[in-house]
Length: 198
Image (cartoon, rainbow, N blue to C red; front, side, top):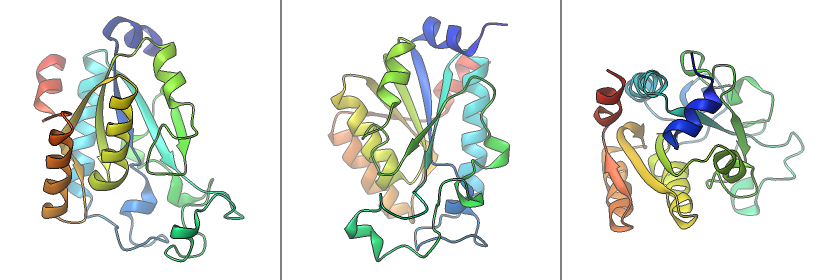
């Protein structure tokens, strides 16, 4: 079986799994008002991950987490988040168990909506020869949209998988996807990956 690195090199494609973490989906953990109804999106992302692995597309995860002393929390967010929210190393920052990375699948740590900002994501992709990124995860109108636009500005081809992302409401999700289309970013469904992995 080819290694993950070989998959990256052969296909020149990667699936970005954005912030599929317990703290955004599990009501018993410290959260903020944009906790999502996550069962459907979890299922869709799980299917997408498996299809990508079958098709030889590499997987890169992001983890949104903050320092325990909150020194990396911007002032505009500081008053909105509860104590202990998404502290690095806490239960809340763990990737949902059924979506967990396999050996060799990188997890990029971020602390802003844009997964490229002050992270090694661009380096991780370019070292593997990636030219095309598929984007899934949460939330559509925050980290998914911002990361997709940032990837485009770095000259990647970008496809957002509309049935494997979620927002606080259907209207917010629809508006975000429309904004991505207006930005000339491709919006498609997971079917395109399922067909390739068949």
